[in-house]
Amino acid sequence: MNDQFGRTVDYLRISVTDRCNERCLYCMPEGYKGWEAQRDHLSAEEILRVVRMATELGFRKFRLTGGEPLVRSDILEIARGIKNFPEVKCLLLSTNGIRLANLAQPLRETGIRAVNVSLDALDPKIYKQITGGDVNSVLRGIHAAIEAGFETVKLNCVLMRGINEQEIWPMVLFAAEHGLPLRFIELMPLTRTDVLTKKNFFPVGEAMQLLSQRDELIPVLEKKLGHGPAKYFQLKHTGATVGFIGAMTNLHFCETCNKMRLTADGKIRPCLGQHGEIDLREALRNNASDERLRELFLEALRQKPMEHQFRDNYQPSRPMTAIGG
Ligand code: SAM
Ligand code: SF4
Image (cartoon, rainbow, N blue to C red):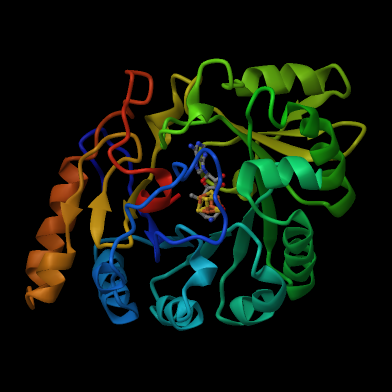
């Protein structure tokens, strides 16, 4: 599918739940109570129907995300079902890694190709301060994912000044040691907690500068690291592969956007950084025809904006955990 700006949109990120076993400062407001009722989450069957429609419209790449996708008890069933569609070229997963130690192998067996694991700090205290969780569980999960033989295991680190900036270099060394691509991500306004202040914002350009004082950054041009918005570099001496995702400071960020999102409660969200959503759940639960579902998808595509509104004093109506990362 091509949108009105000529971008090919063939990537659907599927949030399977708004629940999570962590509480990241930047994703979930403190004391958040906006959980959707379980009955309002799409069932595995409904998700698979949406995926079938999407493949018919040309979507080829899918990512399971959330909230935390591994808290959903039928996650393996969903992954297997998606992989059963012959048109699905690539199924990926984003996770906080907490449950990955036990699930990595069965997840790999469903055909999931690659996993992104969030890791904002190696220091247990800093990790806990940011996420509320235990970094050792995540590290065990990362090792299990490596053992399970995913094609790629990438690490994602959201940058926050005064909170995890001292973790940048240790993270690079960890990534180099284990041969895992590491991406530094700029904080986006997707929750309401105090963390979203100008004071906390740490631009990826500054992280690049910091790394270039310690090593030489050589641009990686091949596309094999993904077709996403990250700009990748190889560090000459440490050998780490490091990506930078600058949604706030890179003014060309949206030019190659190829994705839409499906929220856990069945809305198609054409852009993370604009409020618009198209409700599929009502149609799914009112026995809508395939044609009607296709129309709704195409409507979402028509509504896909040229760029996000994060730089325009954007006020999130739903936090990241409810939209899906
Ligand atoms: N629970 C999984 C995880 O943590 O990876 C998947 C969902 S999470 C919403 C997906 C990604 O979004 C994570 O890498 C997380 O760090 C990132 N994220 C969440 N809120 C963010 C924000 N406000 N700004 C930038 N990235 C954010
Ligand atoms: Fe949970 Fe992931 Fe959000 Fe953290 S970023 S609260 S792990 S969904």
